[in-house]
Structures are given as C-alpha cells and as structure tokens.
Image (cartoon, rainbow, N blue to C red):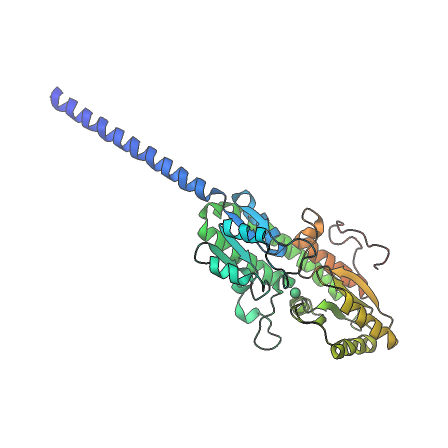
Length: 333
Ligand SMILES: [Zn+2]
C-alpha cells in the first residue's frame, strides 16, 4: 500500500515538476515573444497620421514621424538617414495615393519584410475624389470624418501585426476620435459663417478638395493636386478674374508650398480692381511644430478653419476653438 502510494507520489512529483518546468519554459518563451513585440518601431511619413496615431498607440509603440513642419511630401526625397530608419523600422505607415511620390518604391520593396500600411488607400474607394476621373486626390485628412476612419483602419492594421498594441488602441481610440469629431463640428460652424458671396477658398495648391466637399465651400487651387506641376500663366489669369468677379477677400498661402504663385494671383486680381489680400498660411500637407497646438491634427484643423473664416468675412474666435492658436501676426488678418 505504502509502496504503491509512494510510487504514485513520486509520479505525481515528477509530473508536477515537469508541468512546472513547462510552465516556466512557456513563461520565458512568452516573455521573450512579448518583449520582441512590446515596442514595435513605427515610421510614419506625415504628421497628420503620426500625431493622432501616436495618441492612439500610446506607449505600446515607438512612433517616429518623418516629415516635419513646412516639408512638402509630394517633393520630399528620402535621405540616407531616412532610408536607414525605414530599414530598421518594424512598420511603415504612409498616406499613399501617390502623396509620397518619391518614397513609394522603397516602401514597396520593404513590404515583404515588414508591415507597410497606406492609410489613404484604406478609405472606401467611393469616398475618394478623382478630379480627372482616374487619379485619386491624396489629401483626405482634409475631411476629418474620412480621416478618422482611415486612422482607425491604420491602427487596426498595426494591432493585427502587433497584438500587444490592442489594449492601448482600445483604450485611447474613442477619445482621439471624439476630439476630432468635436473639432469637425467647430470647423463646420466657422465655414458656415462665411457670407455666401465670396465663399471661395483659393489656396496655393489643390489640397482642399475634401475640405470643400465636407464643409460646403468652393475651392480653387493655384497649383494642381501635386506641387510637382507649376501653375500656368493662363490658369493664374483665370483665378485672378474669378477673385475679382466674386469679390473674394483673401487668397491663402500654405506652410509647405512656395508663395510665389499665390502672390502672382493676388497681383493679377488687384490689377483687375479686386480688393484682395494674402490670408494666413494654411496647414495643407504639413502641420505645425511637434509639441505646439498647431502640431496636433485638431490644431491644424482649428488653425485652418479659424483663419479661413476670419479671412473670408466669417466669424471665429481669434484664438480658435480652445483658445490655443498662436495669435495673428501684424501682416496677417
Ligand atoms: Zn498636396
């Protein structure tokens, strides 16, 4: 009896030891796997993506945004350092739709090795604007509703590859999207306050088509969809005539585009008798400095809506939705 009992005990003892060893092994393995995926390094091209996505991911990922204030993504070419960062990253998140025209080839090559997400290409195709019927306009962050959807889809793609980010995204996403929805309502009210006559948004390049559709304002770009093409003399003359005829009060430069063509349009319109001035530079393809309010996606929306409303004769609090905008400088207004 005692022999049998002792054998059973020893057997149980061995089984328990084996189970403990297995559990320990699993834990070591699990911890190893968890460590490996704990902090994926994500390289994100534009700040319009990097900032809100960084808020959603919180501390679960190391997020680096490649393009800073004033940088034009249409023209930007990767430096050797950028390429090294792209190679070292666990994932790359870009807008796509040919916005980052000079970077696409590298990202496509890296696709077999790492997560590569084009947020703009995750948007429902029927929601994309195709001015020539074929090529999709890449500037979809100008519609906060469409952009919220694209950011959420990009976050889901990150979680799919790095499940360790699931809890952070689940916890943070509702607040990020609610903040954007609140700002979208503010933008809508500001743009609606602009008098119907002269309710035309003329900007340096065709970055505001989605903004125009979402907030019901006619938009005209001096340059085309990409800053790669120069504005023609005939186009500048046509714009000047529209400004004079419609009594448009301001034409807007952009922080990431040369102001030369905008100034030519203003001169042309003034020559036709228009009382038009240069409005504040808007954030089109780049945002403000990281850490500044204008370096946040909602800050960019706030700045644009507030400046456009003030410039075109509408109503807006001078410091924006949250009183956080940088004050207008002397030559703005
Ligand atoms: Zn652009």
